[in-house]
Structure formats: C-alpha cells, structure tokens
Figure (spheres, rainbow, N blue to C red):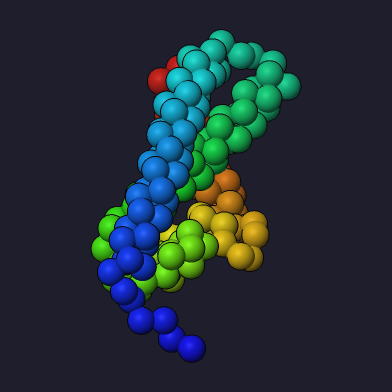
Length: 161
C-alpha cells in the first residue's frame, strides 16, 4: 500500500532529514579529524624513515607507512561518501516517509547512483544492510596503500641517495 505524502508527513520527513544531516555532518567532522591526525603521523614516520639502517627497522617503518596510508585513503573515501550522502539527503525527492530508517533507505538508494571520485560506487565505503564494505577496504589498503607506500619509499630513497 503506497503512502501519499501529506503536509504533516512531509514536515516530519524534513525534520528527519535534518537529523540525518546532523549525523552525516558529524561523520564528516570525525573523518576529517582522522585524516588530519593520520597525515601528521604519516609525515612523522616519513621523517624518521631515512634514519633507519637496520632491515627490521625499515620493514616496520614501511609497514606502518602502508597501514597509515591505507587508512588515510579509506577515511578519505568515506569522507567523500558521507559528503555524497549529505548531498543526496538534500536533493532526494520527498516521499512522505516519516521514519528515519525509511528516509535513510530512500537517501541511500538515491546515493547509490553517485560515485566517489567519479569512479568508485559510494556503497563501497558506507556499510548498508550488507555489513562490511570489503571492496572499499581492499581498494584502499591493498591497491592505494601499496602504491602510496611504494611511491613514498621511492621518494625517500631518491632523496637520501
């Protein structure tokens, strides 16, 4: 049975959307803080990496760079995805659904058409009903983290030699 939007339902839906926007904006702030903190830690590790001469120290340093750069990429992609959810919360058509779960599902369905960096589906980085977003995790840690670690270690090698 389809629910016809009434003025009261639309008003309640707008209030629910405001609550969702508050949640999404707090997620954006959290991910921004994590990105800044991880970038500071990454630069601190990169500063000490040229002074490491033991193979074990270099291995530990590069593995830390890999984990932190993968985390940076992952949080950056989640940051973009929450930005997409904010945009879609504002732009999604009004349905008259009052519950936050119903509005969130409408926004999520609308957001699935959007892509992060115009390439990757936003659902790869925001867990929905399926739980873990393994595609986004693999993309960020295995691909982007490895490439970033390789490029940073190459840059350090060029600078120190």
